[in-house]
Image (cartoon, rainbow, N blue to C red; front, side, top):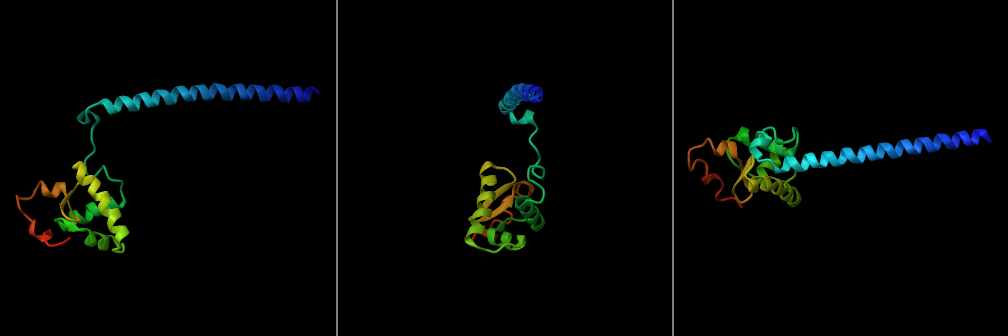
Length: 141
């Protein structure tokens, strides 16, 4: 019977140890949440917003599209972007890509919408003379 009692003691000791560690984990999670909430209160200038190139995950479709438009030097139609990405020009692919690009454009980050289903880069547009390249996308829908 002493072996049984020894096992029960060890089990109880480990359960107490687990309970203690779970309390510590809860405290650390609460502290982390408080830090994250505090960070959200700071003005964006103090947070150090990443540059356009840094804010896209390397190798992602958005990063690839940024490179494609940058290399092209002007806004591109969604079908051209899909073709250059090596994807089929299907309704689903068009909706997916234009939705992602549109989200960035609505926030005024990285991409801009220069026409229906036509996207450019803010960094390029900010460096071009006014009115440059606007006639290319007027006929595409």
